[in-house]
Image (tube, rainbow, N blue to C red; front, side, top):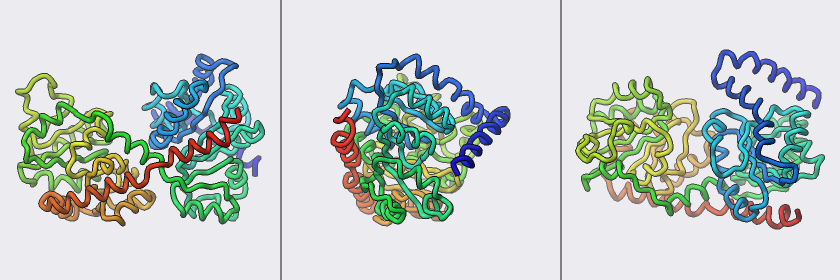
Length: 422
């Protein structure tokens, strides 16, 4: 099976070399990996030891951040290396100031694994959530370098639990420890005799819980919501499918309701299409003048955020949040960010692979809708019934606070079992 896997990796690499000429994303994927070892050699010396985090994409990076911050503070002598598989993670975070080195992970060949691990000289390695790359793991095991999964999620349909999944089970068993988000994952792993497992929860709860302690004030939001009776509905990370179910309510909402829409796609064409759907007075963030109190921001009903990096703070102003991604197939976006501020949440119908959404729905802090009528109905109820809105928001806030602590569990394990021995 090892031969088959390695052959498939080389075949995949060959096809990617060709496919890059037809896709910008694949071109970033291929060309970015050509820079990996040069970036490492510019920053790390042969004397350096590192702590390595591998993240598939942006979401996994966010899950890793609380652990990265804690370990960087506790072990300042180690360099922090972060690798990404996907361009959607690397291209956004390649200039982050937390890691000493941020690179694409080279393809999972034996040669690359040996060269990469030698180049970064890790004392320990963290794979965030669920990526398992056999050649890297076998090389780490060969060199007695501990590897840990954090915020892991396992499902019955994954290859590890299939009769033909022996090779991947072998790779999975190289991990020194596996920290999972839920009991279901622990039970599944036990079914394949993998018992070095701790149910620690999701480190994203630790990440978002810290946000409430920060300065979340935004001058433009204060001006947009200047009227004390305004009700603010924040529609975060929306796709066209989400906007389709929201637009009827937006266009027919009472005048005291203010909408902030932060689309996932902020290209000019996407913003233009969104503006064409809106019948109320609207304004884009890119056109407001932060120093001019006479601009039309306060008189607008809809504020479109056509930039990135502001949504988390904007959620602190929300009375109600609609979190996008669930009406289509792109994947539900982060519901934890509004929840930490005690904001009731509405999402689309497709969230079966998001256990946090399923859990919050079961607690009645989140509502799923399947069409425009259902969307208008639940938002109207949240707007008109202040007690219902407050109760729902408190459920969200309590849920966040009761699920923190994963970072401490993981760091305690590292302190007692790994880095204190180095």
